[in-house]
Image (cartoon, rainbow, N blue to C red):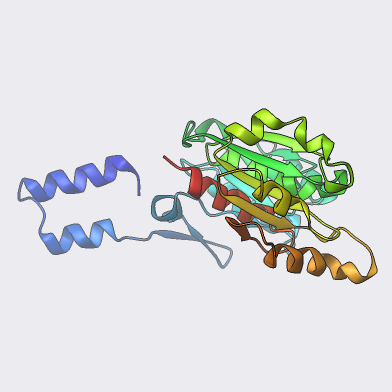
Length: 250
């Protein structure tokens, strides 16, 4: 719920123009709008600090555009995740106001409405290999859309660990770390042994055969001996960005 509305309700309650019951009802009005059988949750930003986001993977371009068109009228940033290039182009023909980030596979609108400077520090997003970058970018862009400063360090995996040490200043100063890795998923354990801040381990589906589409990386991260590590689901860059933002929030 927007701050202005909360202030108005509280003022009316204080002045006796609203009963306690009416004020409670107004403050717990979880408004939604129906768009082609889709309920858009406009109060999610107020409740959770994250606006409703369109998961586009199983939606067609028309559905995405219809939902996004309604959401663009809100006072919040609009995000759609898991959007392939062809689908993004079709959506942008209908809604040119949406910007496509190919590497993150995200469409973003209302960027001028992003609440800036929401974090206590910098969120560091690390990717073990270049193949992990799309998931890392989904996490990074999500955090940026939620008003946080993000620093990226990509292709710094354990096969050439000296590359990570080239980012020593970032390791020493970042407030939260999102560390993506496929294969055996070793990089989060390395980072967890070097920093005294929260590390969000983000397994990717990158790898061969017995990597089982990211399961090997997931299991390696879950069994890390480094303390202070929390593990996200496979390829869940959006979830990692949201969690990092929640930890870093002022």
